[in-house]
Image 1: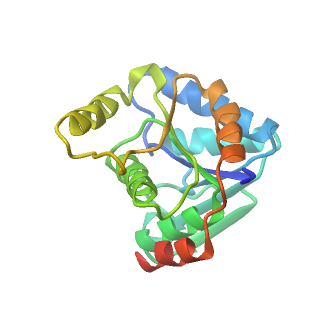
Image 2: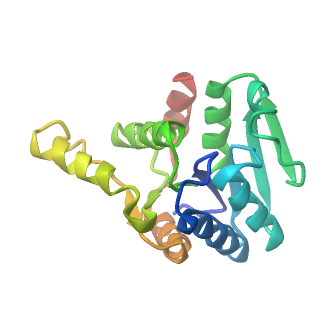
Length: 201
């Protein structure tokens, strides 16, 4: 049985064009804090990242930010978080975010958010970890990606035995209950799997 204690959230350093994205980040931050789940995120004070982290803090939650040195000025480090880890590069950032989290959530975002999400899905697909992965498709944001996954299955590029295991929520209020339920169903990542994950960096 895996207890979910901290959640890594991938999301945009921009806000997007629809206020509903920021509203979802605000609600998700509140729900994480109320459930006593720590937030692990990219460390910035801009866009959805900043909205999410400030919401967790406002509602009494714990935030760990992991940010590369070269992004400190661009993404404006959020000084109020309980823990900030400045790392030399993106690879180290992603490794630490993986190590610190028991589950992963993708809010709307850009190429970086997509890359982080797909990397976790790939390694789960290959059996290297069993941490829950949830796609928060606010206002259908991730629908084109989900359609692409279906297209890949149809054409035989996602094959039986290599299925993608992920959860999809449309409302931020659904995220915490879904993650906690998934955590109760999944075994721990083995030490051997954890070592293999670290080697990829």
